[in-house]
Length: 185
Image 1 (cartoon, rainbow, N blue to C red):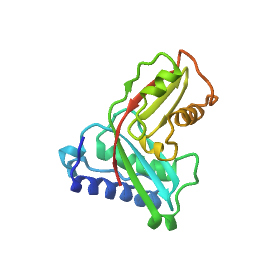
Image 2 (image 1 turned 135 degrees about the horizontal axis):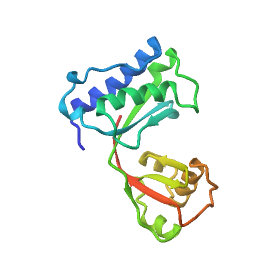
Image 3 (image 1 turned 120 degrees about the vertical axis):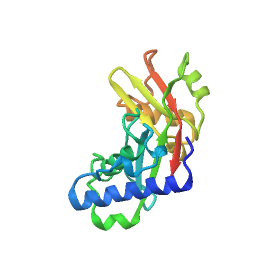
């Protein structure tokens, strides 16, 4: 999916407006879908990542597309600012220094592999976002995480830990899916 510059600006403004609305009301911005062009009404999965001074300040999203793109951005922006359990809710004095990054995901596809090494050989650093599942445990890393974990083995170890598994864990029951993301910032 390729959105033009105007659509990208519209989505970034929407994310910031939803966060500002949340600061005032404690709720995400309710949008009117009729106010948006068809490109922003496609059902898409998104993540909104917030940073302050290059440090993570919140990141929330959906791995499956369940609502229109504009609505998903508004909801996830609010959630990233106020509901990420790793951080206290955003305060008004933080808004001006906030960097907003939007990731619009492609549908996830399973990766077929025969071993951990085979999986590592199939990873595309800087391109793949991954979902790792084992039983009821699940974790994901957006493609942008490759910037801080550029080596596939380290990336996978950290993803296992995010899913609640030991870094050296391996089982034939591990499932891994890949997706890509168009990033707007």
